Length: 320
Image: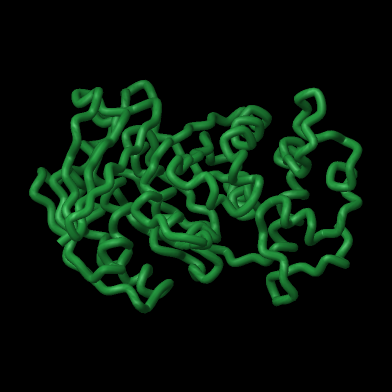
């Protein structure tokens, strides 16, 4: 049995930080999520999603002593089925909580009455998150960037290492807000030479759940849980603490996503394709990336996209 115990938070009365100790096989890891803004509706939701793949990998039950939302508990069977679709070696596990089961109060009680419910999107500056932003641009009010402090060396591409800066630049250019969530939950999956996997996606999604006190809808970009997540992914249709999770379902290849992004002048003006940064400019304006003379696949790689010769890939000899 994997146990999740609460730890003392600096602001227990109105928490903007979630701390918990995850204990398994006599070993423990202290996990946190912290942010600025409204308090979390059900603090245990974030820790539950972050620890669930670990429990399924070890075929051990999961018991939480932190409050979780009734809606997330109800949706866990579907989440586990989706995770098994990504990795058939995982096992379904029992999840129980000894803390109060919570959920969002009626509309208007868990958020200030003067602030309407808002929609946000998980954002890392990559191709899929930009595609999701373009498709839902009028509706999205804020970009959520989840930074895993436990694994800086595992970031697969420059845009993820500079995600917060990219998001702030994009959000400012589009009159959106950037909301940052810091966590170390990736410590639960620390392995040598481990590539980006769906566990990282669950950690990012868990960080999004920490903001359930403010947002009513959260868009999840394609590819969040890996290349083979399917059209929906583990978070699709899930409701947690009054937060509806909406996957960007429409499957699209790299070329289609890039063309969609480039067809949006507003987003295109905020796009970072160059890392020269002379005189603090976001793009240098002179290199092949900035002048759009670089091969298409190299541009996609600058946004963290897959570039192979398959049906959804792009060849290096394709001009942009």
